[in-house]
Structures are given as C-alpha cells and as structure tokens.
Image 1 (cartoon, one colour):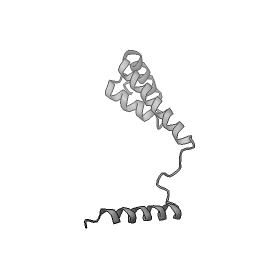
Image 2 (cartoon, one colour):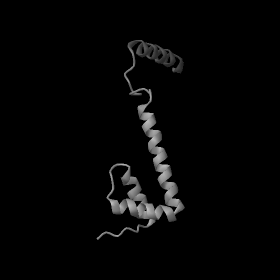
Image 3 (cartoon, helix red, strand yellow):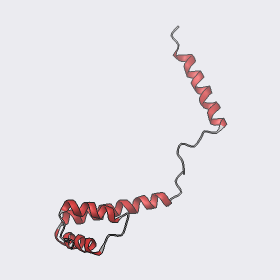
Image 4 (cartoon, one colour):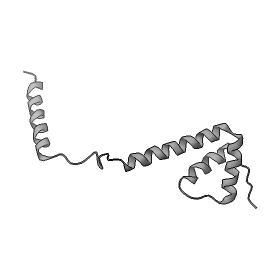
Length: 93
C-alpha cells in the first residue's frame, strides 16, 4: 500500500512530474489533499502551470524557427565590407 500524504518536497517533485505524465490515482489524491492545506505548494503548482502555458503559446507562435539561420549572401557582403572598413580605421599610423 502506498502512503498518500506527501510533504512539500514530494509534492513539488510530483507536481513537476505531472506535467510530463499522468500520475497514479493515489499520488493525484495526495497532491490534492496537500494543496488544500499548503498555500506555498499551491502557488508553486499555479506558477508551473502558467509557465507551461506561456511556453506552449510561445512554441505555437509565429516566432522565427531558427534565430541562427545562415545569413544571406547580401548580408555577408555588407558585413565583410563594414569589417574591412573598420579595420582600415583601427590601424595605428
């Protein structure tokens, strides 16, 4: 038989795990009982759920797929030109 009363350490771990997999009934019930009595763990759970929602929305948004996409040929030429121009001004005469 499993114990179903959890301490804060166990609840925070289980709440985090519950985001990735379905927990057994006794764990879900133990978490609920604990959350009814502990405002800190309840707040932690709400914060985790909020972060998950924000990250899910960000993932589904129209953000650039890869911020490290290769530069276009035109952008490379402009950068090379700018760098060579800057190198010419940084030499000590």
